[in-house]
Amino acid sequence: MIQWFYRDLGLKLIALFLAVGLWYYAVGEEGIEVTRSVPLEIELKNEQMSILKKSVEAVQVTFLAPRAVLSELTVAELKAKHTIGQDVKTAGDYSFRVEAGAIELPDPQIRVVGIDPEVVHVTLDELIVQKLKIQPNLVGDPAFGYTVDQGEIQLNPNAILIGGPKGQLEQLDAVQTEPIDLVGRIRSFRRTVTLDLPPNVKPMSEAMIDVYIPIREELGEKTFENIPVKVMRTPDGPERLTIEPSSISFALKGSVAQLERLIPEKILAYVDVSELPAGEHRSPVKLFLPEGVNLKDEAPGVTIQIRKG
Image 1 (cartoon, rainbow, N blue to C red):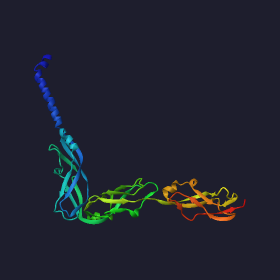
Image 2: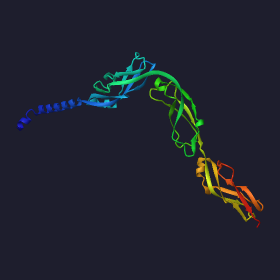
Image 3: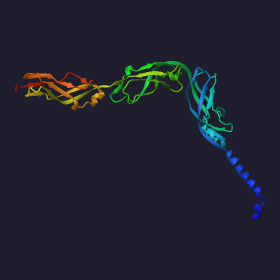
Image 4: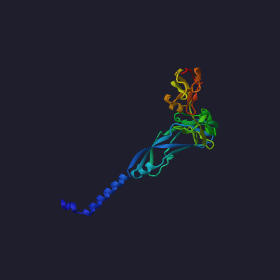
């Protein structure tokens, strides 16, 4: 038995190596199916027509490829193309079959074995040009206490010629810019932005829009109640006096941010009695306020009784 094993050992080893090599070759050439989503591009030869909608944006394509070229299929930028000829001249529904030849393949060893869906439906419409106003697409809010002065927003240009399907453009009153971020803003600013257009719609000229966004301090009102009235007098001024009422309430107007920071303990309300003689007096209360903050109405008054020492 052992003698048989060693008989023609060299030929047997060669045969073994050939068998293993053939097996690896066969495995390498084995066809493997791979399915990928392939974008569908549709070209219209009739320049007076436009695509209003289509049933799919991409087709699912199943490929059969040898293992050795699978990497090419993985990294390739695949796409399917279909051309609608000049003979299609009226608006309406149009259908076509996606053929294997419409798929651009990165290697001739790769075959298309399945396409889903096989039939694509599109709706064609007359291509028109329409002038539409431009609106800024403002996203978020400025910092607390600040607001956008809507009446002072500037756009250059403020309108643009847009081309697209008639049925689609007739539903538009305006087009928007790309989003403009307002979050945390406290100052006015300028931006050059593009348009954010719906599918199948395109500008007929350069679509770069210069936008000026004015940011202003937001104005508001705030009521303060029971603020004590203090007395200002000279060292030799009257000591025996009464004030009625001894505290007052009032509304202030100004920047919302300033009003929010203003607390009652920081407000100085006072009357100056240093030059008043004995007797009863009616005097408006004076307020020491931050710059930009003012009384909403007239200053409240108090009655001062000064008695002789």
